[in-house]
Image (cartoon, rainbow, N blue to C red; front, top):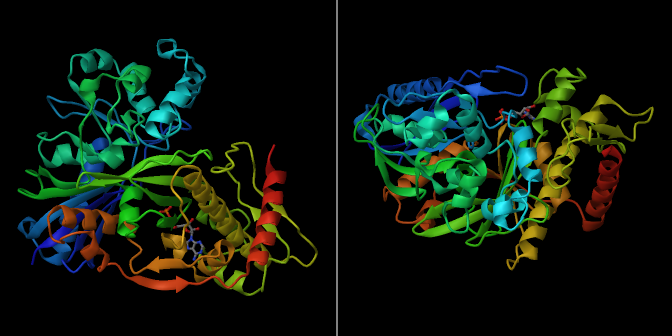
Length: 503
Ligand code: ADP
């Protein structure tokens, strides 16, 4: 039996999955990945541990299925995005630990760059150049300032880079380098679009951006499509064909089969990650959402708008660990369902500031409307409602951005995955506040699913995306049970509460 192997290299673990040709996931194996915290605000990983945990997960999943590497028809790779690695081309030896996307060490560097005028560019502000070309914001989150930090702080690194001896890669590049014994140094368009060095309009590394961050072009990987005959493994999976690559959120969008403009997905985990497919032209975002490449297939590039919420499931964790009103996160559902509404309580879970579309790092969480009748059940319900209202704000901002450009988009349904999406009450409340159906897919593994779908498509297992769409099944649909006036009132009260949390 030939199977598709998906490698899902995440921030806290490496997973490997097997997909049968009928599109079902048959096996999953997972290995934890240790985090390294050298200083407050710094987050690193050992590049060799990234590789060895991924390799161990691959061996385990094949072992569980009783298969050897020759049964693998094709390989798809998806990965934590933006995390930055630099290694020596000659030896494959990393010159530093991987700097993880969460790492904030370059925040000041980014702020300084943002404030600087770029003389060589007619005095244009660097931040606007960066946003215009990359669709992102000039932030420490993305790879460019992390590469620059490594070149500045690892002894001898800049000279080595200038001599063409160093390679940069995000985690996809690193895994492929390892799988091909250093023969292929590539990244796909979706990962490239998260580096701050890739021009999403011309689909090429951008010399002006390389100059701004002072990064030699020779370090960069070749950028390839999301599917195709991208590389052939020699290590671990000899002769294994790598036929699909995407960053994790893009893979999840694909795994949810959001293939047409207006289709959107949300992943409910610690935070929320929303993505809206906007078609073949990039949509600029006045709301400061991110414009990013979803994938490039058959010569056609699809774009997406992305918005994240820092605190979603984490608000439930806080009820459990901070307030002690829950013993476990899933308990929140029964507790919240024990009251018909939140009793006028509004919980703004801005525990670490507010992200899109409010963008206020100084905002703090707040609970409004407490009375003597308020119980922990009302708090639980208000926390769930707070998650859904944040999501609604982003969906509306995305629609408004899209409609400001030439694209007229209406989100007709939201496809969901992630740990907290198993909460039926939360999903019903989300449908009610958005006024559109919420659709839960059959597997919660949207990211791994997307990597396998891309790989299978790249290997020709499915003739086209239309055939692939037949493989995707919803498990449950939550239809809105609210009326527009109820929604309007709820959202107005929420915005008033948001206003009061801001400094
Ligand atoms: P991550 O991938 O970010 O670690 P997961 O997808 O594993 O997150 O989801 C875990 C998060 O979801 C935690 O923040 C937890 O509090 C929350 N969570 C888990 N189960 C539920 C539930 N039934 N209702 C609401 N939140 C939940």
